[in-house]
Length: 466
Image (cartoon, rainbow, N blue to C red; front, side, top):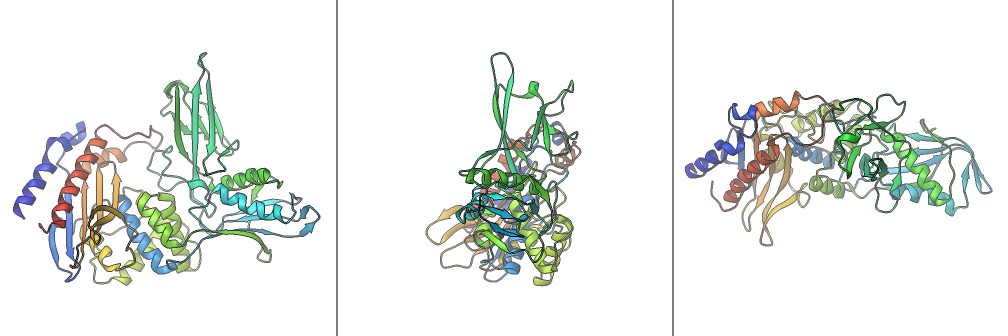
């Protein structure tokens, strides 16, 4: 045990982790961990086990636990078309409503299925108005306001969220220096141009970033700085107005399918309007598995909001209010856990304000029982019945891992390991939202070294060395 701690101390205190001018003058990164025997509940190894760290995407684990318990693993999100009026020959005389249910996996391909349902019934035109209803969940322009505004992992949130609320901006430069830039919404089949997203060159003498939001537009748009773009390239951008984007995508795929609808406008579906078409998501357990494997923030937020809506009987007003309901649920479900210092401002962990201790996270995984079995990512396999599976969390200068170590013919081990460089994090949080989206100097190397530390520690535990 002492030898292992000395090894870890050498890794953490080495100069390779002090990689920025700020970090070089600061205290070394702090590390905490907790290892719990699944059979006895005994704490086998610990360091700063009750110190609060930044969980980052490990916060998706408590979100998953609450959602699976509240909604059930077989729960499915539904997206519907409803309408007033009636069919008259090839036309539908009345208003059409695209009604969101919060499906995080909804794609433009499924929107086309909705349109094709009407076309298959002989309807080729809707003569009335076209509304989109995103009232089932709160409508938010982004997940966390402290992140760079152009990062694709910080999109808007809505009950109508399509293609993960992401855009692809691709450009090429001609020999005369002129720039051609195309923006599309990606899907498996129906990848579509998005002319409703404004794009124009930034006329400012010194642009702060290659891409920044265009606040001069009534709708959604971006300013690009030609001088900061490579001759050829591509970036992913987040969608802020997810509901309108979904409605515009529906209108576009409907036209491809042979159905004409009016320009979209926001509105609520009348309670008496019948449903005329619908699509459903995969079961929640599969959505959670994908969210934990690929760590998609939008998916985690929509799943968390759906669970909160079920608990409260109405949509929460904000992610913070929704996350507070989850924290209360956890405290009531596991009163034996010391919850002091535990804080979830949202459901994805995309916030530097989240806090959790290693012991809290290890206990959460232990107490979840079989709910997370097979849903976490396999980090290391060891035969048919053994290995390490868990959820990683990564933020600049903060790295975490929580999960379980399965051992043949023995009780599993539950653990959490967390590292953070607090001065470097403080410097990162002081940056403005409009800034280049890339990592700060030294962040990637710091992350890699931290991950190596965690890997060596968990592998030792797997071998019974603690």
